[in-house]
Image 1 (cartoon, rainbow, N blue to C red):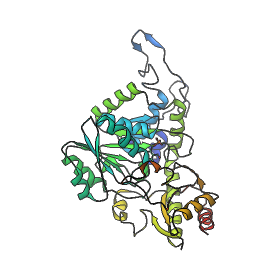
Image 2: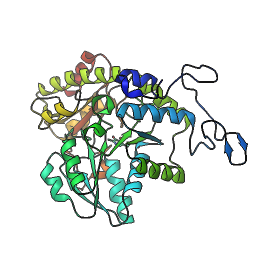
Image 3: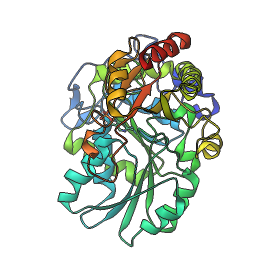
Image 4: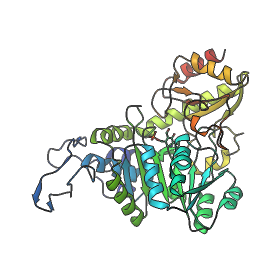
Length: 385
Ligand code: PLP
């Protein structure tokens, strides 16, 4: 396995793509090639595999990249030291000073910080738009627009963007659509097959899946863009170490079974919250009343493991709930097997305070884990009082 991974189902690709037994020893699991450099046959001559220095390439990382590409149905995959390193690489490969991008009005705070605080200093301009409204996105396009930056579902309000429609808007303006697919994962949604040009991941989340590694990835079908991304990554050095690549690869093997359970539990939790008198609004694209439900049902297999809600009694009451849960651990991040709760306004999205991306103060975000769903609902009900 597996030069032509596309003939296999998702679960098979997750376990075998890029992960053939080691040709020398037969090791069934891809080894951790914990080496910085590689012996050369002569000056300028590398041995089989073209490895010469691990910033440029490393076999454990190559296996991860091939597996990720097979899961997203992409020709090329590149792994990074973090999701933000992956976002930075995309931005520096695609935009130049004076260019413009359209950013969703509900986006991960770190992405907003990178664009607003770092890249604007370098001459990038951006417009914020509600990506669930295609006309608003079209109106935000300028002659200098090179990129529409999309999350779907969004972080933390679980908004849904119509990916094929946004791809159409981008392409008719000569721009590209990048989709941050961290919340959905390739198990639930494959944006390249829906018309996107670039897919981005924080592999820290569901792909790694066990809250024990930080990483990122970029996937694309464009050969030239892959060369540019590779050049910049080698020049700037934002690579994951071999052990981090291996941990992520191990997580990927169980992605499908974990995602099914994340989705089961999230649906159960969302229904329970909806029925609770202390809960004002529940944000979950699997709910029939969610404004993006129909679009999500068209482009996603299921609706994911993230649920947000607002407390009917305001910010302090929300903070109290976050302090009272027992199983839902109060922590940033998401996508691990354990359930997490956080207050976006003061935690993950503190960097958007005062901007058009500001989130409601009474909002709580749940990363619903794969524990017994009844225990999770009981924990939330107890904390809500
Ligand atoms: N994209 C999304 C949707 C995220 O939630 C995050 C982190 O929370 C990132 C990107 C950044 O990833 P990382 O923390 O791995 O740098």
